[in-house]
Structures are given as C-alpha cells and as structure tokens.
Image (cartoon, rainbow, N blue to C red):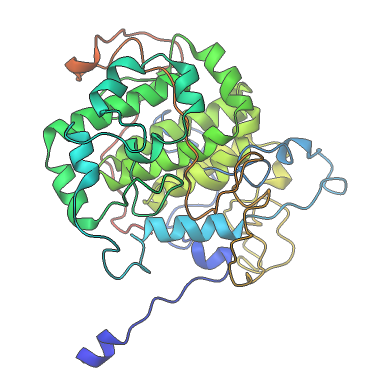
Length: 390
C-alpha cells in the first residue's frame, strides 16, 4: 500500500473541460430563476483574461450579434490549467520548494523590508495610500503585498508555504495589515471595502479610477493575483463580492468594457466553490452580449463536453488537447500584456493605487465608514451549498 501511495503522480489536465468542474457538480437547473438570477443576493463577483482572451482585450467587444459574422473565440487552456492548480492547492507541488523562513509573514509584521526597494509595510500603507502614480508604475511591491505559492516577477519575493499560510492566518497583526493593503489596492481601482464580510461598492473616486482601469490592462493581472492571495490567506469569501462588482460594471453599466473577458476567464475561476462560480456565471450569461458568444457554460445538453458546436450559451471550451507547455506561451490571448512577457502560471505584474479614503466599517485602523454610497453591494456569505473546492 505504501508503494502505491509513494508512486502516485499528479496527472496534469490536458483540456479546458478537465480543468473546469464548475458545471460538473451542478445540482441546480441550468436555467436561472426570474427572481434571483445570480443566487447571491445582489452582491458578489467572478474571473480574468488579458486583452481579448488574454487580459483586457477587445476581441470580445468586436463580436456582433450575428453568429455568422462573429469570430470564433475559444477559452484559454493555459488560464484554465493555472486556475485549476490554484483551486486544488497546487497538486503538482509535492513539497515546499524553499526553506521555511516565513519571509512573507515577517514582512507583514514590519520586521523586514520589501526587496529590492527597502521599504517596510507600514511605510507603504501610510505613504503610498493615494499615490496612484507610484502604485501604477512600481512593479516590485505587488508580490510582497499579495504572496502566492507560485513565483512572481520579483524574484526577491518568496513563495508562500503551507506552514507559513497557517502561521499567517493565526497572526492578528499580519491579517490587519493585509486587509489594509487590500483596501489600498481597491481604492486604486475605484472600489471601497465596506465591512468585515468583504462587501464592496464604488468608491467616491470611481469615475476617474474606472477610466484608468479600463485602459490599464496589466492591472487585470494584478487583480488575479490579489484574488488568489485572498484565498490563500483566509479571505476566500472576499472574492465573490469584488468579482460580482466587476461583472456588473463591465457587463451592465459599461464602465469597464475592456475588463469583460478578463473577469470571465480569470477572476471568476479563482473562486473555489463551484456553486458560487455557477451563480456568477449565470448572472454574466444573462447580461453578456452577444449572447451566442458566451463561452463559460453551462454546457449544452447535447454533447455537453464535446468539441463541436458550442457557439451558443453552452459551448464552454475549445475541446482541443493542449500541446506541451513552453515558455513561449505568453502571447496575446494567453494572459499577457503588451508590455510584459509573463507566463500565465504566474500572474505577477500587479499595480495598485490609493487606499480607500473613507475607511472600513469594522476596521478602526483604516478610518471611518460612510454608509449609503451609490452602488453598494451586499453579500449573503457563509452559505455553502457544497463543501468541495474544485
């Protein structure tokens, strides 16, 4: 028996369908109900893509309402595989790949500075808040503020280990600063963190910041990293409200049209609970135009996982087996930006901006809470229909 366990090897998925279990465990009707299409009480959120199949593109926007004239789009296998590994706690990582120095935790305890800049976390939180130019153009801090179990572009930043994650989650001071960093980044994007449940709304500066975010596609990579890090450090429930807000702004309000594909291809799929992903995707399907070009399921009842046909609401992926991954898979459509060559398996280039000016209810260290902001979203959290994370 020991030999069998010892000889086990993780088998990498080779198709988008093998990476995406969102609809495989669906026990609900494929059709949304009239009363509550999203199932999340008017306030949650989903995924990411970079420039029209690769973080921030306009290919999705160039589609027309005519199925004949619309270009055939496919889901990114490399994005799907990257997020599959993340949701399953990196099954290909058999052991910690570095000494257990807890450098991420020590950084958040204000004991060591960010390398190579030599800046401590308290200085970042106090002096960079509202300095949008610094948050936009500095590319070394994001890997320290939002650590993952995968290597980022800043090779001075250390990857998280499972042992460090446990220690971090039990350290109040580190968690307080982590939420302050999250709040700072949200403000940079024009979003305000409202409470301890992770509910979000437009910030007072939303118009200016949304205009910037709509054109700053490399920030979509950063948002993917932020969402992943939330899940790693104990704030899984914070993801859905932010993703839902971005879905509403990109699909319904039209304030972030360039983010549309990134939200669906990446942001949604950072969420570990399939039931939550389904609700967000049902909401997105209702508002996506053209409707026939929606790629993210549910699969059509006729040949649900087949490779053909799926141009309609059910066609969830290409059905094509992927070639062996190479370092060259950074091209447009595979989570990349025009300015930085980044492997989709390490969503690194992340910029931030001004912290939320109004503060957060429940977080006295971050300021005061101003209720009644327009566009405020509320999340019914803690309700988990299923316990599996896949």
